[in-house]
Image (cartoon, rainbow, N blue to C red; front, side):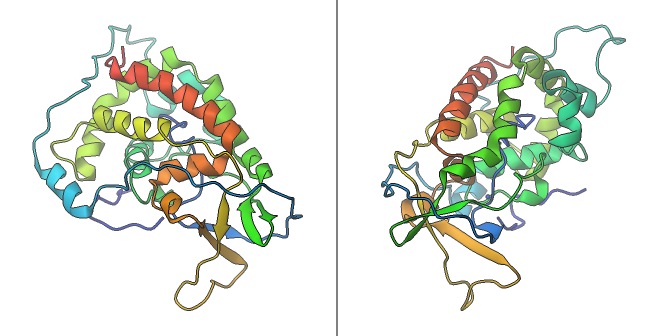
Length: 286
């Protein structure tokens, strides 16, 4: 399956980071298309304005970066010598090492995993990350909406939709993850260059996206959302389109907005785990 290049526009929003899509981390997109339900409104505190990271790079800036030879900041160490008989032979076998076989059936989408993982990691650090290339399944059910006065907010119960991904991240064996990452890295690097970064290095990009996610502010109150008018009206067919009411939050990168929708408890938990992952990747995946 051909993954859209950076120049091919795609619409949207936790990996081998099933995480980073866990964040990586799996959420909804830049616009949250969700099926509308009728959740019981629960009183929620007023929203708070949060500091934000700079918006994703412009297309012109990204194009310049793609054409400029880069210096590799975080080279990945070659895999340690392993007996051929004991080394996994395919992507699914490598994924099973840190995450277990059950996750391959319930969360991961192993078909075209390598290019999809690479495209998702890159997209999480930009304005949009297409769910069409997520390497994991999306969260179950629609966005859970509550109310605060006359405003709609993301309900605290919405965080439960992300519990499977947070548990997966907790259970991930980092030593085994690094072994799989080193083994698959030549494929990741090749997929990253084919994505539209002929002079780039995937591990450097992975770390940059993790830095962005780790720096995402944690909400101190329920976040207000609204239903924008699209092409003259809201979409029909039982779907409701939501965006953050605060333009500063809506301008954040796709991965940051996924973290915000997870809720503050999940966000802190995920960020702590991603810090350790970032440390390992920066050390050359050793």
